[in-house]
Amino acid sequence: KKFESASADVQKLTKRPDDEDMLRLYSLYKQSTAGDVQGERPGAFSFADRAKYDAWARLKGTDTQKAMESYVKLVERLKKTYG
Image (tube, rainbow, N blue to C red; front, side, top):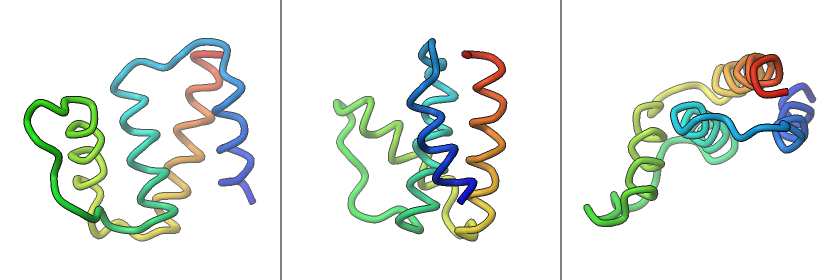
């Protein structure tokens, strides 16, 4: 329930978080909802997709519940920083 609330709250931020925080949000969300990274690593010229894939891949093996808890904590911090 906290995870769903945090997912909604992140959409309400008044400023866009920096790229590092955005990648962290993406990777934790994907690990929470889809589990370990899947598919082929994007090519060298797909910079954004490759960064997202790599961020998610770093969380491989992370328990779904732990990923959700980390996501909620990150959103709470971002709410303080970015409104």
